[in-house]
Amino acid sequence: MKKAAAVIVALMTGACSDGSLQTATAADEAAIRDLIRQTEGFNNSADSLGWVSLFEDGAVYMPAGTPAVNTESGLRDMAATGFGGYQADIRIEPVEIVILGEWAFARSKVSGTVTPRAGGDAIPVDVKQLVLYRRQADGSWKIARFISNGNS
Image 1 (spheres, rainbow, N blue to C red):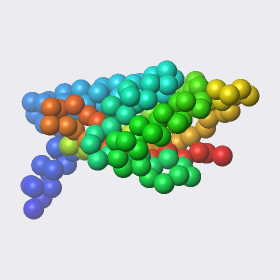
Image 2 (image 1 turned 90 degrees about the horizontal axis):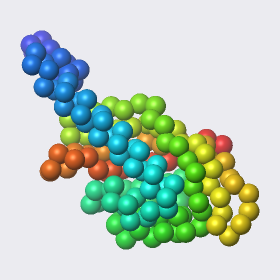
Image 3 (image 1 turned 90 degrees about the vertical axis):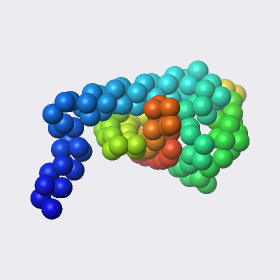
């Protein structure tokens, strides 16, 4: 039993003697960071199709104050409405990234502004989010669950 526990701990911490898990974890973390940068970029450029492409089939988006969205058409509609109504100038800063095999999560803070396209003052953004990623069959990562909530 102790031997099995030691193997599990070694795998979870990346302490393999050949370093293969550590290398995979570093590459996976880089891929997750790239997805975060893409999410930020698609928000700031109002690219709803690009934003939706970051989600896997069956993903669930849970924004604050609205019902969960769990269809691709729902994601497209939500992105088109949000990006059509506001111009974002945000920064997504990962606070924590954890990779657990085929799943990973990133806890991030989002700051900046959104400006109504119809006119008006910029609105401050102060949001926390938790995004769960799942490794795809081709080895890439996609968003599986996306949860956000304002800090104020």
